[in-house]
Image 1 (cartoon, one colour):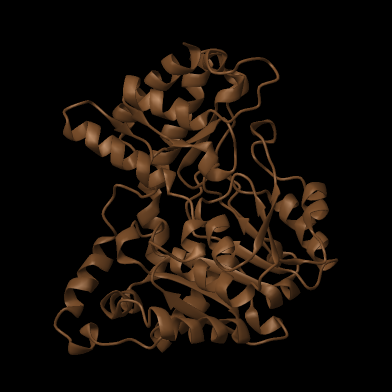
Image 2: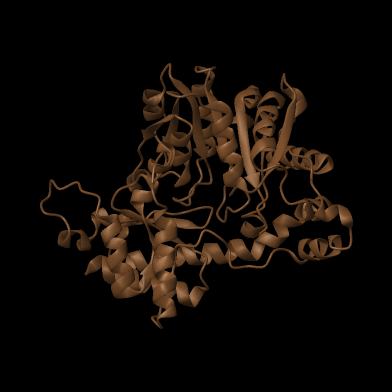
Length: 407
């Protein structure tokens, strides 16, 4: 069958593949600890759920929404962005707008479609979210990678970022808090990044902030544009309700940027997906977003507790050098390369092969723990785990992971 070349170039989602295998093994009766999940196992806020139920009585909740989203909802999103990030868009010398899409992934795809021409380069920081490079490739762009390691807690060097910038750079993606590392970049880092980007005025900055409100250790996340608001003129901010309202399946994401960029994205969306779910938009319009902080308090406590389990398990296994402190989102990157288990896979000390898929497959089949290999995130011989399991189950899963790492 002669399919489009762009489809042939897209890699299979390793996350979905391993998750499917974990589900299959569980169905066969095996005890499985699934740490691949990128979603919270909590119900959304009661008030939001009641709002959805209340909208079922209105005809408009079942009809087309405007392509870019309900006008009043878009105004509300802009207001909440300014309040939550402590910025004033009126201080910036351009007009801003927002677009509501079918989840953050859809919004990100539209951003790349609106920005990238064939041959344009987009700078990504490893570990990166799995879909960034695939999307960039689909639209004819090329990725330039800035690598990080566990030794710097996966925080990128600004010197390496500058080395990756060139005359062909169209954009750089900053994902803080980060999926998959579970960290966010410090205020000092953001301040220095702002100074760096001032020297490259033609580069767009895509700021993926979908985990902004899910930080469980102080200090909370801050952003480069808070140090220099003029950078907002070429910044595209991504957010949504998937993480902060535990509503991944409701598919509401949005972008905030200068009006011209949003108009370009809206033009594209009008011919691909049209407007996102009108029912959820109507309910979100009536939801008091100031309740998000209170709603997330027990969830963040849960994530903090599980992050401490990670620390203690590594210490008990005398693998302290393989541990770093996470602060946000709900992930942790396990680094196999410094663990005894690697001796069974490496042919020599000089062997730099990425064995993360094989490591994760063995861990699943023999220990019943599902993780996502680092190959999916551009970080070899690592794997991502999710911190969302109930505390007792997570403790058991971490014990099994340690037995595997030191075996």
